[in-house]
Image (cartoon, rainbow, N blue to C red; front, side, top):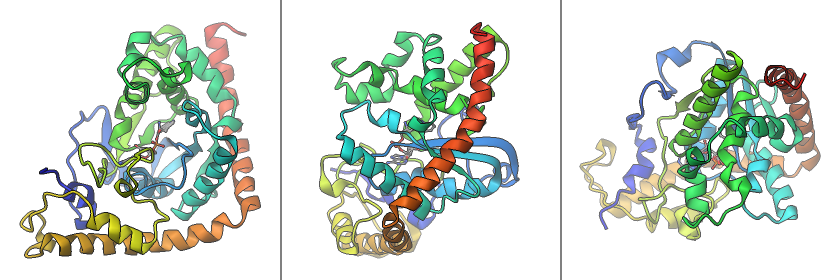
Length: 336
Ligand SMILES: Nc1ncnc2c1ncn2[C@@H]1O[C@H](COP(=O)(O)OC(=O)[C@@H](N)Cc2c[nH]c3ccccc23)[C@@H](O)[C@H]1O
């Protein structure tokens, strides 16, 4: 099958993928515009489904760390309410939340610069989600990716899975966020958040800025087994996904087995190499890039108390921002 592993490895050679989405929806991160210290507010979220993979890192987390130095106000949430839209084992979920916290810190998220918190510890998310859900039509949600993928096309999922994107809109709007760094797979969800903000503003008066997506240069890392799909935590094929905690041997194995249509003409720095040599080169680059993260992650994971404290403090700071906004929403809709 002629499918490009090089597409999933492009970042290594510094190739910048072109943004195919309209300018109004998204902005690529490394533009001059965004290098200026911005007065806006950045918000993003990640599901606690284990240690992040290379797609999460290159598509989102790497730029999260940069943005916290560039923006005045930055919040990152571990979205555990989203995680339970599919069945979860409670003990496993608890572990995953702390493992993800350690991973985010290892990727450079600094609680002194960014508010890092668990979504379920700030109840305003769920409450705003209800209000926004009352402004959202069912047909608008039916075609969004989470529902289409996870309900298996048979309308089999839970109500929570169906309204998942409304909760995501609430996450973003609750902080009047202006910029949302995400991978390409989240753009449709962001469009919904924009629509909901417009609907609310029209009905109740201007309150929410229309949030923009910030796409990294590596906005879609593909599965190493089936490049027609994205690299994903839920991929059942063990060799499809590179986790940040994979051992160097595992990384080499996964790239060696990766599906590719590579020809050495395609990437200047690999000219003249055979496919096997090229794959090894990329595997070594990934090992080199992830080694410091692996070491730091191991250290952070050992101190569960510290991780809990980071999340508790983060939730306090998030609530200080969320409560007055929700109060204002209450006033506008007529609750007080
Ligand atoms: N293969 C890939 N290539 C490039 N980027 C990728 C790849 N896989 C994942 N990503 C990006 O990683 C981030 C977290 O992924 P999640 O699936 O947990 O991401 C999700 O499931 C969201 N619904 C979480 C969420 C909840 N509320 C939010 C509010 C704002 C932004 C995001 C959220 C995302 O930026 C995602 O785009």
